[in-house]
Amino acid sequence: MSALPQARLASHYVVHLPEPDDFDFWRERARALVQCGVAPEHIAWVEPGGSGDLFAASAAPGDEHSLPVPPADARPVRANRRFVSLARNAALHSDPERFALLYRLLWRLQANSRMMEDKADPDVRRVEELDKNVRRDSHKMHAFVRFRLVETEDEEAGEHYIAWFEPEHHILRANAGFFMRRFANMRWSILTPRGSLHWDGTTMSEGPPAQRSDAPGGDPMEDLWRSYYASIFNPARLKIGAMLKEMPKKYWKNMPEAALIPELIAGAQTREASMVEKGALEFEERPETLAAIDKAIHACRKCPIGQLDNHAVMGEGPQDAALMIVGEQPGDQEDQAGRPFVGPAGQLLDAHLEQAGIDRRDAYVTNAVKHFKYVQRGKRRLHQNPGAKEIDTCRWWIESERALVQPKLVLALGASAARGMLGKTVSISKVRGSPIPLEDGSELWVTAHPSYLLRLEGAAREEQARRFDADLAAVRARLSELA
Ligand code: URA
View 1 (cartoon, rainbow, N blue to C red):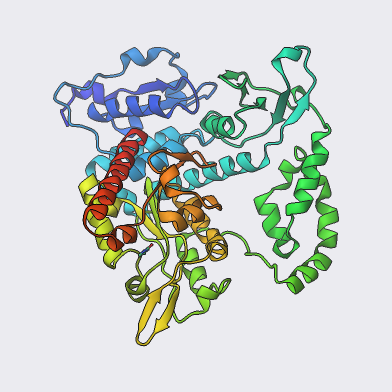
View 2: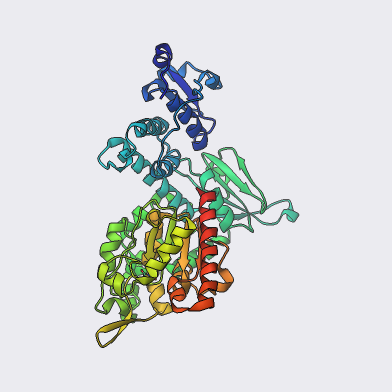
C-alpha cells in the first residue's frame, strides 16, 4: 500500500451515502479509501438523515471531492466472496454503524485474507448477525405483504392493488425484483414508512415514504385470503411459540387471514387427531442450519426409501455457494462414502465441470432424494429410480438446503432433480438451455444426468456429451453475469 503524507492520514474523512441502501456507492468509496491507507477510525459514514458522529456533523453533503484519490500504482483491494455477499446484505440493516463495520472488516481483510473464517471474531459475528436479520426481514416481507384492491378513477389503467408493510431494515429496493416477478401482471404499489414502490405492469418507480393511512383498509380480497389460509393451515404443525416467531403479532394487523388465528388454534387439536388417523402428518419447522438438516435426514423415515438399509447423504460445499448442483439420489458408492457424487457418475460430472471451467469445490452439491433406493440382487444393490411421491416428500430437505445456501443459480441434473426443484415433472429436452425463474429470484437450469451419458455408447454418447458441455458452458457464462 503506498504511503501517504502523515497530515493526510491524521485527518478525518466524511462520506455521505446518497441512499441508506447504496452498497455499490459504499463499495466504490471504501475501495478508494483502503487504497489510500485511510484507517477506519478516520472515516465517518453518514447516511441520509443520519447524524453520523461528531466530526461528521460538521461536514456538509457533497464533500466527497475532498476524499483522497488512490495512487495509480495502488494495490488492488482484496475482498472474498463471503465478505461481499455478507456485506451486500448487512448494508441494508438499519444499524447506523453498519458501514463503519463493513469498512473495518474490509480494512482488516487486507492484512488477513482468512479473517472471515474466524467465527469468534466480534466483527465477523456482528456482520453475520446483520446479514441474518436482513434476510429474515426480507423473508417476512415475501410472506406477509398483502395487496388490497383499490378503487381508481382511471378505468383504462385497470385494477390497482396496494399493500402496506413495515420493514425493519432498508430492504424495500432490494426486494423489488421479487414482487415484480411474482406479480408481473398486476398494477401494484407497496407503501412503507421507508419509501414506496410502484409497478404498472411494465416499469417500476420509487416514491417517498408513506403512512399507514395512505393504504386502504379491507376489501373483498380478504375473504379469499382467509379461505386460502384456512385451507393450508396445518394443525399438526401448530406450535404457538414458533408461530409467533415466524409470524410476529406486529404483522397481524396487515394480514386479513390473521383474524382467523384464534379460531384455528381452538380447532387445531381435533383436526390434528383426524390428520394423524389419515397418516397426513407433516414435517415440523424448517431446520435453521445445514448441520441440523444433516442430523434430521438421518432420522427421516417419511418414505419407504429411508427405511432401507442405507444412510442419508447430505449435500456438501460452501454455504455461500453461488451455484447449487442437484442430482437425483446417492448411488451405492455415495451411500457408503456418505458424500454426493463420488462414484462413476460423480467422476464424469467432475470431468465435464472442469472442462466448462466450473470448480466443483465452489459449488454446493446435493441430491433431490437423500437416501439410496435399490433392490438387492445377490450381493449387489441395484439402483432404482425414486418415484414422484418419494421425490416430493424429500423436497422438504432440498428446499431447506436451498433456503440456507441461497444460491443464485441451481443446476438440476436429470428429471428427478428437476422435479425436486419444481414439484412437477418437466421434459429435459424442452427446458434445457434456458433459465427457469424461481420464486426467490434465483434461477434453475436443467440438463441431463451424467448417468444417462454413462449408459450411452459411440456417437450417441458423443452427441449427448456435447449437449451436456454446452449446457454447462451456458451455466458458467450465466454465473459470471450474476457474480
Ligand atoms: N447420482 C446422483 O444423482 N447423485 C449422486 O450423488 C450420485 C449419483
